[in-house]
Length: 74
Image 1 (tube, rainbow, N blue to C red):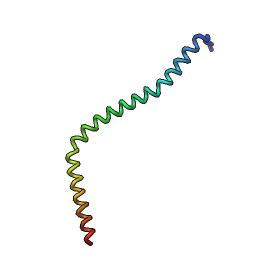
Image 2 (cartoon, rainbow, N blue to C red; image 1 turned 30 degrees about the horizontal axis):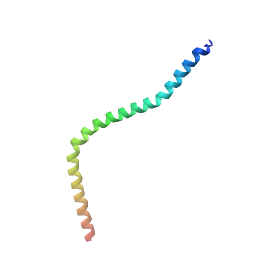
Image 3 (cartoon, one colour; image 1 turned 60 degrees about the vertical axis):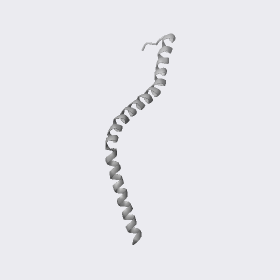
Image 4 (cartoon, one colour; image 1 turned 180 degrees about the vertical axis):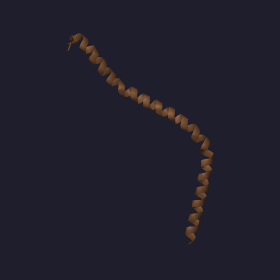
């Protein structure tokens, strides 16, 4: 096993520590980018289904109100 001179050992050690420190912010930035990219794809799909979903929810709300009114009378 070869022993590195002290002058060569510190730059390698500094490089390793520098990479370890940079890994967290770089990883966090990559995760944010991936999440934002995925959100943009889902937004287009949600917008196209939105009017249909609103009508379905309104119909369900009307049904629940009718059921509640019927239950209140009995």
